[in-house]
Amino acid sequence: MTGEVVTRFAPSPTGFLHIGGARTALFNWLYARHTGGKMYLRIEDTDRERSSQAAVEAILDGLHWLGLDWDGEPISQYERAVRHRAVALELVEKGLAYHCYASAEELTEMREKARAEGRPPRYDGRWRDRDPSEAPEGVSPVVRIKAPREGETVVRDMVQGDVRFPNKDLDDFIILRSDGNPTYMLAVVVDDHDMGVTHVIRGDDHLTNAARQTIIFQSMGWDVPNMAHIPLIHGPDGAKLSKRHGALGVEAYRAMGYLPEALRNYLSRLGWSHGDDEIMSTEQMIEWFDVTDVNKGAARFDFAKLEATNGLYIRGADDAYLVERIVALLPELENTEAIREKLSAPEMRAKLLAAMPGLKERAKTLTELIDSAGYLFAERPLNFDEKASGILSDEARQVLGRLRPQLEAVGEWSVEALDAAVRAFAETEELKLGKVAQPLRAALTGRATSPGVFDVLAVLGREESLARIRDCES
Ligand code: GLU
Image (cartoon, rainbow, N blue to C red):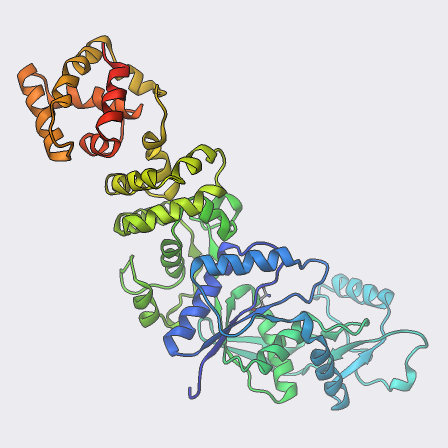
């Protein structure tokens, strides 16, 4: 291949950017960046009934969040309808397409006949060679392409290999409706040509369309772009991806607390891989990605793997970055007004930042991080979960009562000094460390599990820690 690679992502704005669309966008983006080419964004809004501006915005938002950018301005397919129409009429003029006046009744009859004969329903070409002077009065015709009837149309696919379609199965499909609007099939071809698209990378549910689109390209004498039809995403059980499996909008993943870079990393491995590398930086993905390496077989979406990937990203992330992400995510989550309010104070943000090294060791998502940071925001007297209440027995409360003066005596309120003080106390009392640390954790956090208890003490600070212990001691 010579010349610049041009890819495009061409979503229909009929809903959110779903996970399959996000992966298609990612592959187009990776390939464009890998080759130093361009990726355009084309909004396929020809279907006015089903398209909405809200969906366009949701798609742009989703792409932004995932860190996928595109070259130039988004292109509206609908706004190009005049050009699409002109191409259809040019084909009519060249004798490569024709007006068809078949009525709805005729078409139904054709379909029923085909069904009765066990053939797939195809238009029979009745207006293909008829003289336009035979046109019935007052009927607005559609325009149909004069598709070849013999031989086959071959889609040379970079992922699927050569896929052959017998031309007898591809009928004279409509390119312009009777109201003068282009069909999707025509609009895609004209746009891909005019945009200089060299590589069409999209879901393999478009493979049959690729054959029909090839016919239009060839009729116009245009180069057919390289095609790469990528396998659809299935659930872990091999069935088509459903909501339960994760067929959700990208914004749902954001709300579940996934990091965009983790989701992007995970998506890149749905149908593509680079050896056994699970975690790849964006630079590595760009360097290694090649569309010819995409697998033919369906990819399987696995929530557990996505979570594990996200956990690795969280552990590796910068603490301040995680605080930022949490602050950005909170408004999307219910019942977080109180936390948001608290986090608007710089001291509380500083506390969250200080707690982050301990918190991030255990969390797989940002929402889990927020949950385990709950002790920071809790108000005295704390609510204790069942396990914590169980730990805080009379005996344990007495231990806390004897421990507190030892902690009060600590000079510098640091992890090391607190650690030393608690250990010394346990030794004097001839108690196992756990017998002291467990009630202490319960008293400080209201839970039986938390980050390291000395970290918790240090992050909460002297005054708040001692107050929480006092609330529980006897
Ligand atoms: N608009 C189509 C879709 O969302 C994609 C068309 C294409 O990529 O050619 O499925």
